[in-house]
Image 1 (cartoon, rainbow, N blue to C red):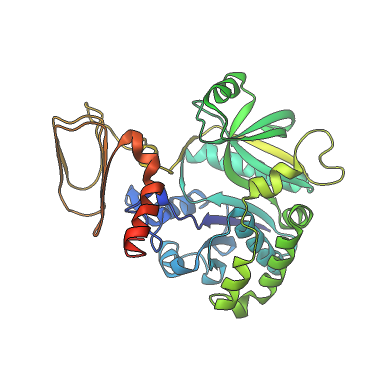
Image 2 (cartoon, rainbow, N blue to C red):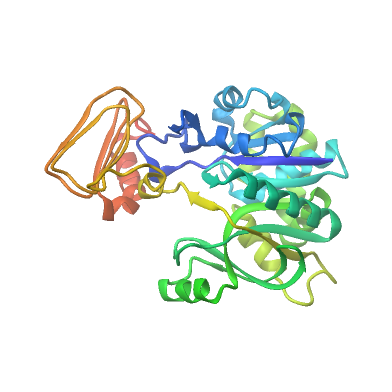
Length: 366
């Protein structure tokens, strides 16, 4: 049976002060009155039955997540006691899923992206699930056709085709230098790494056992005990002992591509996804989905007034009026108890600001 896992455990530090530990960015309602998690759920509407959709998130956010996706069974919500990156989030979910359905086919999806149009997305996902079923020893990833040489993304090099829009993987490259990224895009052989996947639960578990044996064993034991220990200090202790690593670094890159893949381990395949894809990892990326005025200002707020200003981003969820006069290229983000103001070319330093905030104020504004 086909199942879907939505990864919704990111902290969204770069979107502070709206994104907080107990209400991270995937729960913010900044587009069409719906949260990023709700958009992720809607993208799967005609692909998976509600009872076969799972969500991995922070244990502290379980009630909020349950309210966002009420049609997803509560037993399918996995509350991680702390973040240990995607290899462990996916590994725990795969173990839990395999206990329920040993023959499960598993799609993995993100909750911090905006993807359009829906018909192209759905067609690519169906193609990927078919490939994962047809090539039972394969790990399938989805590659976004790049529209720019973005150096902040991971890249996947495609090799020989194995089916319509489906290729062997030759290489992964994480965040290349700008000139190399330009070469990748110009060649037409590279995709952006979407962070979405399809595979048999048994196949990804075998790959985890091969590449991360200690994590695999600990996650298997944790999954067996999950009904009794979920939400307890015992689960937190056991989760904290896991090596924190992403699925890309922990499994996909060690497995590798090329001709030998599939003989002594799984092969890697990539399915082309020709969609508009926005990684909502910064205020500028988020503003790229908004509508700019003639001066380049983007208002993602119910009430914003800008006079003689240009290139500004204004963000708020409240009716609080934000007024800007004679300023350019600023990010202004308002929340109930904190406000961020910074030049747009400094927004990547929000994480640095968060560390300083923690030193001065502790967890008060987390």
